Length: 121
Image (cartoon, rainbow, N blue to C red):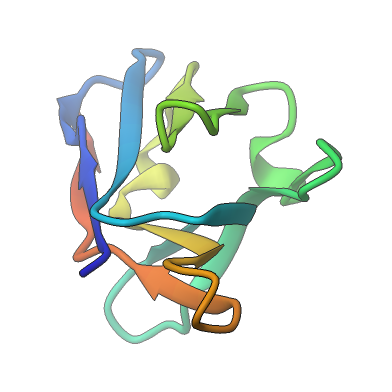
């Protein structure tokens, strides 16, 4: 069974940095897209950054130049390096990955449980 787990969240000061990790455990036959999303109470989940199977990276305008998404599909892991953090970055961050757990099954999206990021002095 595939499980997606985020880690690396916590408390940071404005201007500080955090690095989030996302690991897909279990049987993985193939990996396509990775995405990082965030959500605050009362708002819909927002795409922060994603990377296609071809390696094209997209960022929401508010994090361009500050956040960097990377992946290591051999390790079944994606990362989100967050620099120059701002209070408005405070949210629960979720990882999403599109993969095939087996040749027997189609491509599916898997979500992690989220990791809290708080940016405050």
